[in-house]
Length: 133
Image (cartoon, rainbow, N blue to C red; front, side):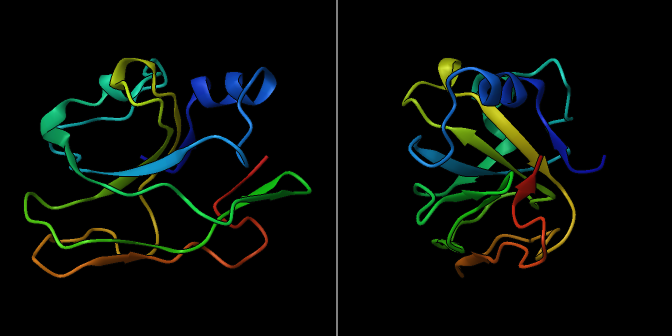
């Protein structure tokens, strides 16, 4: 699977999803327990066993010229299955209403074998940053 923007994220961009003001988080995903589908729209579509760890809210978010970026982030140490992808989502506090935005399975530290050390996610510093429309 290549990196993708979920259709629910695209719909949000065209209606009410403001990337700079929404609470956005990252969930680290075990692809042995989850397969990307364009039909998935909410965090609840990713089974709990596939959600290995979740970040805090993304900080320093910007949108410039159709390109989204945020500060690099650190997820405290955790254990569990290998992480092969990450999903960016709008967190509402309820999995069934938290909108999936982007699926990323290439680049950075992926795959990552969890241990008690923190994982640092450094977003791409090229022209496309986290994602570009």
